[in-house]
Length: 280
Image (spheres, one colour):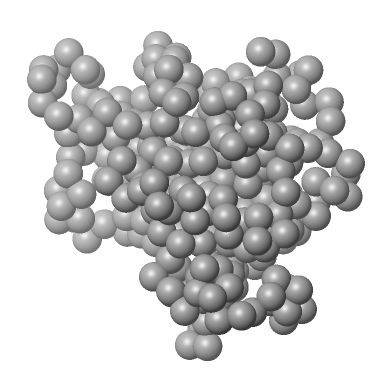
């Protein structure tokens, strides 16, 4: 699959994770993605981001498809209708992620890390990244796979300390983050032998020919991380459009624990998609 051929026309995507019921914040972002695809006369893809083995449940996948359709969303390719870039379930794309990891290993861009989350948090009074993730203190930065034997390990991407990663967001304007200060070395392959979000997202968006990623503003720092992966893998990055987050009455951003604002609950209350969209 050549990337250039797939990127001629606009290709956007919806990428929900079936770890709970989708809420109104998801719906607003997905609606924006659909509108962006329509404005550009492009194609909209639904991808089932189901890599979380423990939390992804069949009932959430069914609810995801039903609730998105009820809200008025329609896609051209997806796990329910197929398409030229199948499979559209991340769980069926592990060989693509493994190939990308092998390439990063060969390039020397990643290193094995035996640290647990507790190790990292207790190593130092670890500073936090711009998205509140703990910045990795670099404990395993000089490790080689041959040195750790059979100990359980993850793979971390080595960021270029001090380099400014800049991009222009189609909605929020110029953005910049400094590697090593605003975010640190990040996991691309988890210790339980599953690709981490950052790597899986980049591989899927690249191989599916996505030309613009529409998602929430909480992922702005992830964009900086992912741009480093695109560069390392030699792939052109898509454009980005980050949406402001929808918040509850207390000012907290919506999460899947907000059952009262889930699309399923709102639907059962007799609310209509038109009514919900009019309130934005």
